[in-house]
Length: 123
Image 1: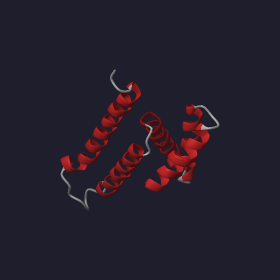
Image 2: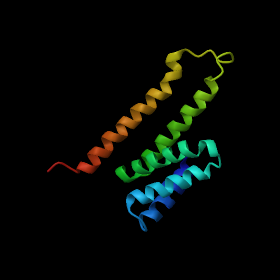
Image 3: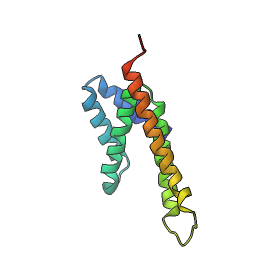
């Protein structure tokens, strides 16, 4: 996920921000991120994720929140995949929901940080 963030939110997003408005750069980087995963049925979800991560980078001014969010997203998908066949794995529901809770908490913290970053320091 670090390599993808460096490529799509670092290189691609920043390159298109020099040529387009922010919204256009976010959309182009998101579409390219979706296409990069080379799956027709995963294109739209990946493009939406790419747009959200790009917005996070634009709002915070840093690549690191997107790297963390991307890693949490991938972690949730791995846990979900491992737990999808209940006959093989017997994990209590609270443990299965923990990655989702962590992810939602991180998203909330990211929104708080992005709002405080946009507001600037107190006078």
